[in-house]
Length: 99
Image (cartoon, rainbow, N blue to C red):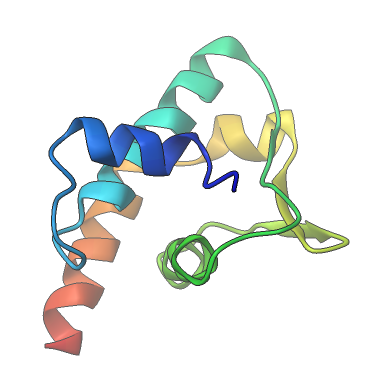
């Protein structure tokens, strides 16, 4: 079963518990690398519940993902314009408010 590279990276970190923000932090780092490279972003079209929840969490924090079939997308310009530190701050604030 293909569980995706983010899941493998999480295992390499000692498989932190859900709800720690580790996956979101890693994903924001991936988006930062994409910004520097000037590329677009497209998720897998078949995603786990955790991956879907991650994308929805980022949407609530201000990321304006497009949708192509079942995949979340950002074109090069949309990705370049993201203020990732502000998004990270909003995600953290939303998580605190949820508790």
